[in-house]
Image (cartoon, rainbow, N blue to C red):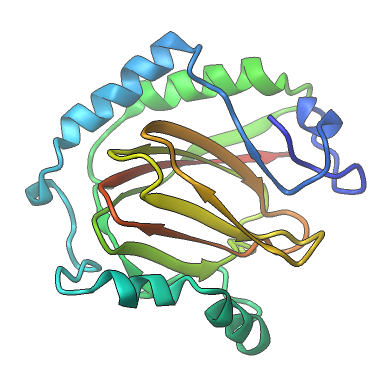
Length: 216
């Protein structure tokens, strides 16, 4: 795990003593009960579109069109013209499986995070987005600035380095692309300081289970 800057708001947890950045990786693979529940989530969905809300999915969208939506040039336009762009809105090509219940998964994630970050003050933890990114799937640039705190995403990719999480580092103003490894990937970033613009792109089946963490 490596992110955070000493000048950022304190959390009263191990997050305050990690190296500089707004984005980091979590290695949660050692938490066996959590991994069991994550794999159960993949099995439960079974890549079945009938279990999803398809209102924001366009099967005819090309990879080229999707890739263009997560380019740096589009980001710079949003920064200039829509600095308050907290959510991607309709600028997506995804399938939702938010009606599926993963209560035990949420409990195991909370336990794993408590062990990893060791908070000394009360924190609020709850589930966020549940998305399936297909081939030519994407979520456009946004920064979640309307919901300060931390975002944790568990992403399962069917193929190696065929999908990515991309963000703009507030400290350097550089766009960073972080490719998914095959299997489970764990990322965390904060939204309670400078806007952390980010987006997602995929050329494979990519499942995303999100959580929010906020310190009181």
